[in-house]
Length: 112
Length: 116
Image 1 (cartoon, each protein chain N blue to C red):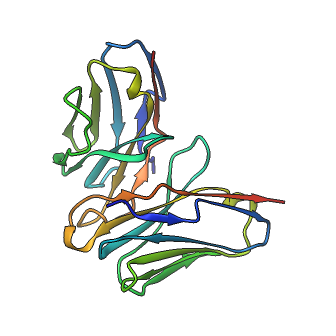
Image 2: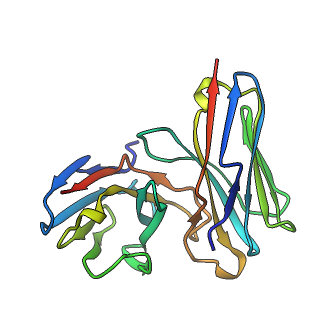
């Protein structure tokens, strides 16, 4: 079951904040976040394994709400380099051992 | 440390020809994944291996597609015969970890395949 990402697209000015959500209809085992710039490969950002876990570095962080079967990616004080498409990938709790299913992505555009 | 290496980076071929894509994963990674990405369908998993053994090939579109991993440092994805609808960017990714979904996946640069 493909996770649903929202919003589909975000347009920001430098310094503004954004939140990208990833929801699943199944109980989640893990949530991954990746960023892909145009013409490049996806780049791994972080993985969350436990309900309630929060991770982050620099000004990009994520949370995992196991109860809501949802993860959110927080981009604070956005920079031009944050532009790209953000994908979440999930594995379901009752399907541990199966590979990731990726959402359709959220396109983030940051301008100066 | 070198990342995931894929070759060729670009491939243009005619319908009906055989195409072979190659991947060298990051040394020490136990998992290897093949993905296909198109605008219409997004990022789709085709097959993944654990310790060189194919685990899930349910994403392979049809019998024209086959994948092998003869050793820990090399994998191929073959399309025979190729069709225009196979045109896409094909990514290989590798991952460490004791279970799939636990380790982050590190993607190669991709092979852009165009079938005319």
